[in-house]
Length: 539
Image 1 (cartoon, rainbow, N blue to C red):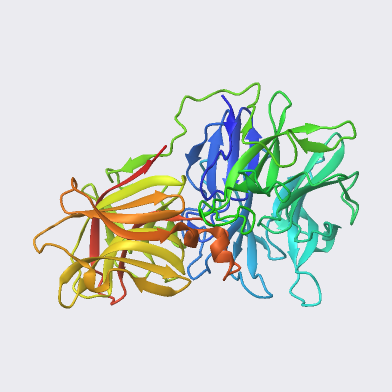
Image 2 (spheres, rainbow, N blue to C red):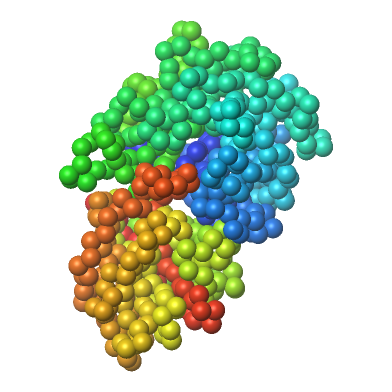
């Protein structure tokens, strides 16, 4: 049994890993996707079980109107004083000189909650983490944002004392403890006290192919006292362009019960079109930023290093004291909507799923048509992460639109400007139709147009399918659920990648999703009924 990277495939960025007794927990960023903060647990670092998200209501998290790739950035999970502590950032602006944001703190006696109502901490910068020193003191450690055009916006790492009695920071204690190196964009800080020394782990280079993690250490927490590890970086793939794992960095450290060390970091797996060179562009990451785990050793000078070199390894030896699970690692699943409680793999945009958007009843999912898929306030959509480069997803839907502003179907989605779908719509001449459409950076294309497929008049249900094949994907339909008709429109999957979105936007931090959606921007709330959703990975 090996740790096979990535351990959390698909969009699972910015991992914060801890261990409590014999169980490991990881918290990941969710950005504009709801519920906020994704949690997993494991006892072997190989098999990971998804847990209920801590921010599962509008009372705990309000993101309506947040920009794409705003919302929850880099949560930090810790355990101290008999409870879990969760720091998270809600980012309201992603473009331009400002990064308006608020850092919050919530706590819980158990990882499954109940979580306290979040307390506002500050807005100094994102990627905040809470360090619990062994003398009982606590500190907030965070990236610091500088809007002034004559300075670099990543001002450095700030440390501020936290009063656990008042649950408030002491702003006058704030000091810059580390400026990073000339690589710049220092962020994602975590502090650990090991052998009476403070170790600072931080990311640099931006979360692209120049990304890296560095380590610095100090005998104290005084201003500018941290010294960078020589012969770094700690982990990076900038100089390992041909390795399948790329962009590693921004992560956290964990120790096993028997004293071994591991590091969890974000990672991406790019692919190329057959006509493209392998290095420029370095590739397209449709699965977004995932989570990998690497083994960590220590040299005689007390510095950590990644086993196998700073580029990391695809397979890593698990902990010697691991309690192995026999759960399969395949992520195929089928939802027949037999319970009103949604499976935790389902996500919505910015706001929780509730009666305003639909419900699960009579073994069907009802979606009430709301705004378009370009809307950042109310979208009636349930979606799940792409977790493989090769998979089929299908559904069975009943929908009777009465105007062309009413649509429902199966969607592949990155953000409000980049998506495609096969949907049931309406045409003034043909009546109900099946169409394939794509939004490419807000350039909208209806591919079938006058050749749109006419739906038989008395047909209650239509089956829709998407077929993802790494570089390209396509759609199909069926009128009986047995005989499928492939539509000869081949779409470029690169349009749903971090790297493609980066070309036009500073918000490129999520990954591709597949899901179910209903649109009625005419405002008449035309509803769709979905009988099941099936996601099947292909070896």
